[in-house]
Amino acid sequence: MADELDLLRAADPVPADHPRLGDGPLGQRAERLLADLRREPPARRRLRWPGLRPVVRSRPAWAVLAAVAAAVTLSLVVGGTATSPAVAAPRPLVVRADATPVSLDELARRARADAAVGGDALRKGTHVQSWSLAMSEDKPPITLPEERIVRWKPDGSHTELVVATDPTHPGRPVLRDGEDGPRLVEDGHVLSRRSYPRSWSDAPPQSPPPRDATRLRAWLQEAASEPDGLDTGTLLDAVELMLDNWTLGARESAALAELLAGTDGLRPAGRVTDRLGRQGLAYSYEERGLAHLLIMDPRTGAVLGLETTFTRADPRYGVRPGDVMAYSAWMR
Image 1: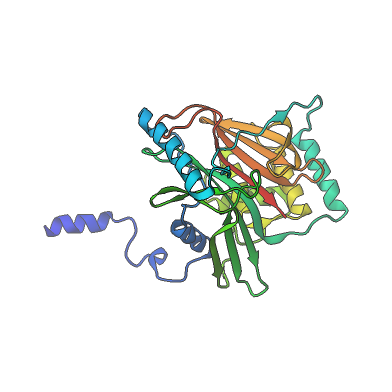
Image 2 (image 1 turned 120 degrees about the vertical axis):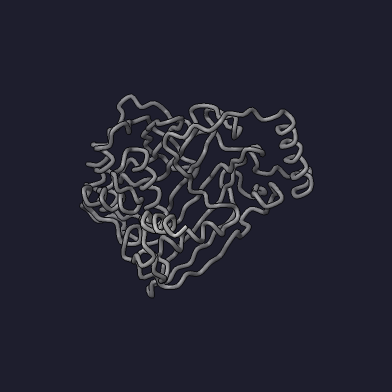
């Protein structure tokens, strides 16, 4: 037995005295991820499983009927017969073809011009409205709309407020996912209100994003923990991570527009009105059964939103082509 134990100990790639195993305070990124794990419903950030093809399994018809019955019951119990709850999943944004598409190179030029005359300043924190699809193998998918506001204080501490709301259906009850299944809550219902102590982390995404496209790519790569580099899909994920931590100023938006202009596969799609009623330019990218639509301000080049939809069905989770998996709309 001693020989086997010696072999196992020798094979351990991380010795017990390795510095990465030492006790110490959590960094800001670790604190955020831990808070996400504790949050109900689970954090909206999607997981990327490159190359993973789940086993396809059709859902029984009774599951769909049960979901419809549950939605009707929730409506009657929570809102009454005269109230129409916001339980429907959002449809994909409608893109209007542009006779003269605006390239990302042209948009980057506009962004640099806007930054040259001043423009908005960089601010730590975020204000984002999101719609995310909660999926499981034994329940129909449901869309969870919420608004999150993160504000940082001069002493380095910050607060986070998350409320259930859907601006496309103002005043209507909002669907949430609980331990006992879907339930309706009032529009503006506070899901969480947290205060965080001062953070000492100086690594991305806590450090300020650079104003240079080359250095910004390196910053995004480190923030996303992608040591092998960023392809277009992981770059968009990293941009989402950045915007969930920072409200970019004009110079940072210009650097991001310049970075995106050199990205493979991101093409002009046309003009669009986002879910907050703002006019934007849409740029599309498709990968592995997903379609990404990046919405940017036509004058400043600032990112307004990011929508991800399914391009093929997955009966395992009850999703169909065109279903919106996630949508984020960032505000100042």
